[in-house]
Image (cartoon, rainbow, N blue to C red; front, side, top):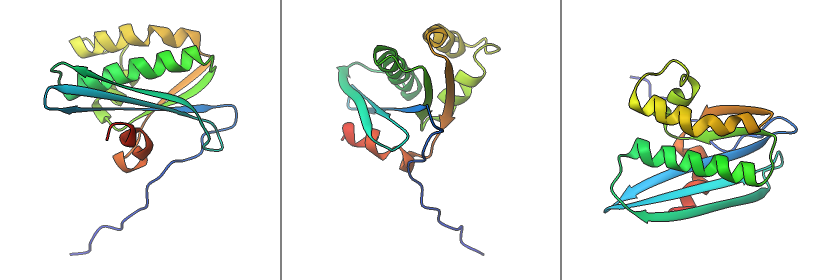
Length: 140
């Protein structure tokens, strides 16, 4: 059997005029942690935030709250073109298909994404968790 080729994952530069907003959430012992990092095309950290809450949530709902916080952070910073990144594939796919998603999660995602009208251009990407290290560090 041939072992898989290990690929070094890491932060990738966004196109010019775009800013990356990387979001992440963690759940541990009845606590939820959220992390948001905002980076420009050179990788310079423009801002970010983190927070904790004592509540019980499923991971997808915690990631949705992190996404909402990230969108509010970008709106506050008056960013017009952004790339949102999350290491949660379910959330990323739900956001991309929220217009046609009739699940409870899909409806909640659609509601949270109403703020997208305030931006010129927004893309959502799934990233490998190894590419999300800076946001992960906020939650450590």
